[in-house]
Image (cartoon, rainbow, N blue to C red; front, side, top):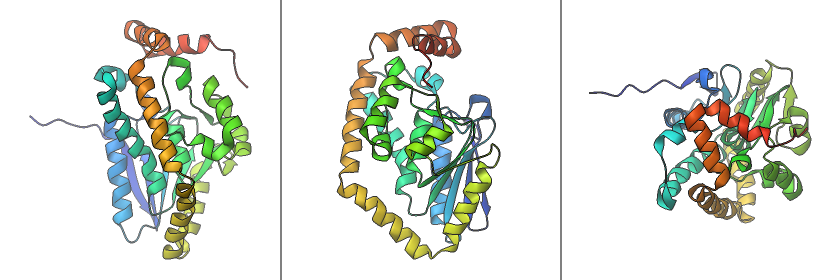
Length: 275
């Protein structure tokens, strides 16, 4: 008996630019296993294609992505350090593949760009945001942690601590631009066009120069031990996820008994609105 896997992405080639579209709009493009597998295969295909010289990532529907799929996570009943380590290693490699990709990666985001999706956008080389986009990582609000702790490398420790320790998931596009989280903010509906414009400029440049310059920039961060710091943070996230805690237990209880929407409402009701 064959298992039918839902088709979670669309991919196309626009000249020398590969385009990957997250296509689970009914779930706000939440990152589940089929979607991650398909995105990885698409990215690897574009890397192998000699006529593709840049890659754009965006989302269908109302959002770029709301982050990792909490419903899938709950259904898997992950427990213990070893199981969490295996899951988080996979998630970490998925997120960092955009940083590690030899070709430029550009994220075009709109609607929600939260949690794991926020880290995915940070991992891309350039991010274009639509006005009205909401950014943030709410993990601390329900006893979870960050898979790829990239934010401090972009915004510094003060802003990173404010955003991550409050779990603020209402950062607007203007503040994201001010902090250096995104490169450009454009009117809603124009984010993909702007991302494609940047990608085409990169694709028109010398492919050797582009690839090696990206490698040199990334290597600068590697020499500052960014990779080791991210892996150390992943170790801490494994402890957070395996340890659970009262907030996580209550969140999971409400989610199980009343659904994810009720659990999210409980989570957010305990916090004042952060502008």
